[in-house]
Length: 404
Ligand code: FAD
Image (cartoon, rainbow, N blue to C red; front, side, top):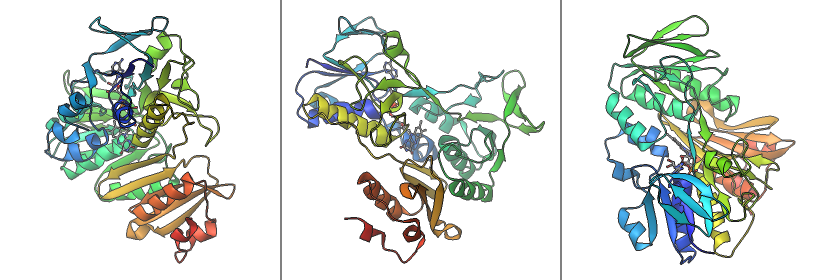
């Protein structure tokens, strides 16, 4: 097969290198890393790391010794182009790497705000360790922060900032928070929890301009004419998959690098995994691009198995979590395209789940502080099982009895 070269040392790239060795792959593995850190975990960047005082080491998957012991060449460089005919990857340092198989694990980058003053130092994003570190060092009690975007990262940041004593306003264009990802039941719960913590959430409005005194942010104007004072703006308006390398190499891309159910691109020597991959899903029909640790690591395991002789179509069950203040949201399955939602548990007691159905079939479960429901959902849905909406709604129904 020749050397495996992996572009990007995030969740997907790191896991692929580690899994290849676990599966007994003995040839060269090169992991091209364009961040100035050992491969690290991203989820804590908007949660524990932002809140805490621990150093960057607490985020690393493995210490440096792991890579040398496992003979994984961590290459601190940036991939700039792919010569498919010669099977060569060119790097920014002008070095190059020959590959037998190339894996694009390039992830995604922040979608930038496209309005005047968005390049001021006090307009921040939250994707990388460096961004989280500099935000953590920057925020202090009493500052006024406007968070643009009420998605997972915006709300996680908002909850942490509020807990640290900042004045927090969240501005969201959609009529409810996390609208693209969760049911209205979950949105409403989190809206009331964040409001109770003193976070002001402005729905159905947009930031139309950022005001400054020449160097620092002083506030924002909203599409409904209101102004909010601010010392800091944190933008969480989604990400763009890093598809440019693939596109420049002539590989098909759309809203991600297009891969088949084996996560292979149109070139049999190139795969794509994780946030950057738009993959054909037999489980769900059609193509999916997901942004989650589960998706990145399960993609990596699937490709590691294929490259060591055990090719199977990718069939991972999506799952996800988000920690916001004292609440833990967990999602099993894909909760889109549902036509009925059944609540199990008690919103008032801060422990409930939304069971989502399509045509009578369970498609996903969103749980708040109900880890048992979440684990049940992952097992049941992975096995393509279901329970009826009546069973889901019945507190006396024993979920375990549905697992065979
Ligand atoms: P990434 O982790 O983005 O890694 C891609 C890497 O490739 C990056 O290091 C990038 O710099 C590098 N790269 C890109 N281009 C090149 C190039 N040309 N040359 C060399 N290197 C390159 N998911 C959850 O499931 N639960 C959570 O609670 C959660 N919280 C999150 C919180 C934050 C703040 C963020 C940012 C994300 C969170 N996610 C969470 C999402 C999760 O982290 C991502 O889905 C996951 O990191 C995707 O892994 P990846 O390897 O595909 O991409």
